[in-house]
Length: 274
Image (cartoon, rainbow, N blue to C red):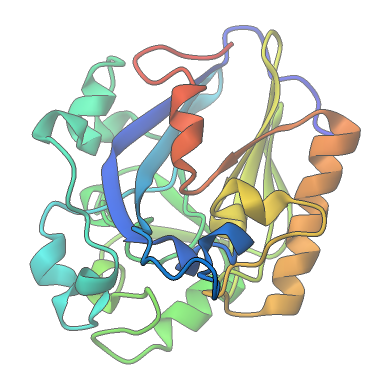
């Protein structure tokens, strides 16, 4: 059970524009499939929001995930991922630094970065944290797995975005109470060592930032509608079960990694939750 964060804690949901991809890579929803009686090709090219989250806590400023890089076309090209998941809908004002600036902060004001995993759309701004005071909190399994991938990368990993950077890695194993009211959740399966973040706010209640442990809402159905792009399907289902229990038993609001419909329901920065 996650205790309530102290008074004054704020959660900012930061939207950095959209990638696009074939929806069938996110969840095998039956409505997506063609049938003998309905063979008209469907447009399944769907927006995939790129999100990061800022927590202003009395003990420091915490950033969850690092979004995409503006030079995605050149950075991702060698792995083929630029063709599969282009980051093709964003503005300069939606990039991390100007979004942070609208909350009164800069990169140098961040004390901790929690990296859900090291896929290209979640670590794109890691280079901004070179030689800063921020520790980069990551699961040991994710760090070791990603670092063992040969350049230029494969399966969503673009090695140039996280290798040979002068950042302060802080490797953990399993859950970790990061600060009062904030807990890192080990949610493996989508990648070597995916993780999420739980935060219980005094007014708005319990949020779980699932990142790609649950990419879209159908992943959280009962039974879950699986994502085909997972590293370990058994551990993914165990992580989904954990998220379902937090939703159903603890009343957690689960924010998925790339669910476009949630953008209409969420307060977006510079607005915030308390």
